Image (cartoon, rainbow, N blue to C red; front, side):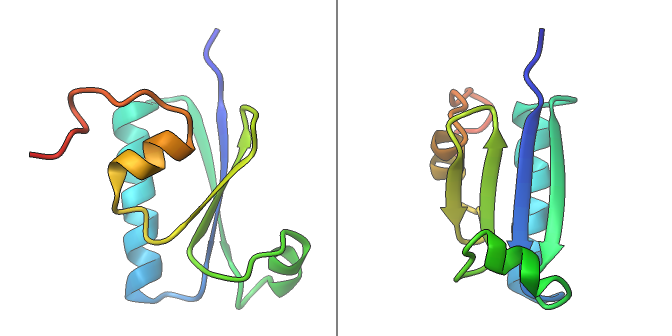
Length: 98
């Protein structure tokens, strides 16, 4: 049975940094977790109460809610190794950058 990764990505508006974080997250999940993830993107300018409830101080912030343990990663998610480590996903040969 596969585990379904539950991910929340908090961004601020439609900025280049937000777009980069969203693209990086989808690319990484498509490569490493095909069919095993659900991503919810939350714009803190439209839903500040959600950001406040999660104590989001900096964006972009990724929260892995499931599987445990809950993890947070801050930044545009361009450092693939750091994101994989934060999500507790083994690094495959496909994701090691040349």
